[in-house]
Amino acid sequence: MSAVTSSLILTIASLWEAPCATPASVRSDRELLVTSEVVIADERAAPGGPWHFASLVRELLPAGATDAEVSDAVLGWLASYGQDQTLTPDPARPASSDNPARYLPKRAGPWAEIAVPWLGASGGQTLDLAKAPFKLLAIVNRMDVRDPAQCQSAAGEGRFVFVALDGFGEPLNFTIIFEYDLPTTTRDARGWADAWHALSALPCDDAASCTGYLETLESVTRAFSTRAGGAQLAQLRTNDVLTFPGELREFGLSADGRITPKALNMTPDLAHVTDAALGAWILENRDAVMAERFTLPGRFVGFSGLYPRLKKWQFANVEDEELRFHFSKSTCNGCHTFEHPRVRGIDGAYHVSPRGEVSEYLTVEELPRRQEVACATLNLLRCDDARLERRHEVKAKIRTH
Image (spheres, helix red, strand yellow):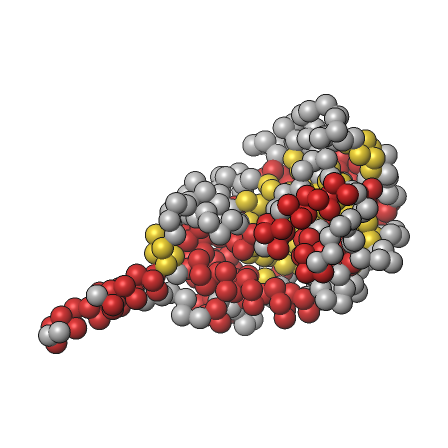
């Protein structure tokens, strides 16, 4: 091989240098789980800012939603906790053996400890949105939840984590996560990975150095959380320990702008703990369960993830401990409590606690895994759902030939 040919090969290869050399190139604190006080205390998280609780709710409603309409949406959501409800996994279909009616009992805490004081501080029947008792805890990149075989049609999620506050501004044992699909109408998964990764190169050690970082982060979040950006709510999730036992719930947005309970698509109703049919389904779907990428059929799912329990999830005829563990870990209450200490949490219940503490499970296990996923996505050469090529693979082929 001539020196000229060798030089040409090296030149071409350099064009495909991976933008992410190692997973460590992905800075978790800058682009995966942002909890910096500089960020969460920024004016963007204050009333009227794009990261404020009320602003996010407003963006979920039809264009031009008034303060009263935002108030009604929030009050309707909190009031739903105070009602006994009978719900079906698919609200568009009648109850059946595949779409069973589930009883969701009321809980007093959210209305009594959040709505009532907020209404009192607002001086009327309509909430003063500037007095929303919610504090931002984290902004989260969850591109890792996308199907890894998809790139053009799925990019994962972007999230905001909040804690509810009491009348003195102290955190209550109630957190809520706004979870959005990252829209693929404007950029594919690789494009989203690039956008998040750009944050790692920007300084943000204190308020004085963080201007560029904050502006870029705002641009990234507006692209998934605003109406103009094509906001598509995947779900709202709550972790409520205002009363015992604790409970995890999930909510969706109805066509008329109401925030309504929805089924926990990876968490069985407690009635199925010893159900042989559920055990059979787990065994039949072993690969998906072990990969923790599955959706339970409607006949099994519940609307409430209660915890703690004295015993871990156990399933009829499932004797393989790793299979049992991976299914349980994929459930809401399994991941947050039943599988402690293998899934290590703050207070056994939170991965980001009401006081902003991050669980050891996240720091030791999850964030390193998410770094690997982010790095692999950044190194995609071509974003194609039929065939995903990686930069380092192309680079290797060039050097081989």
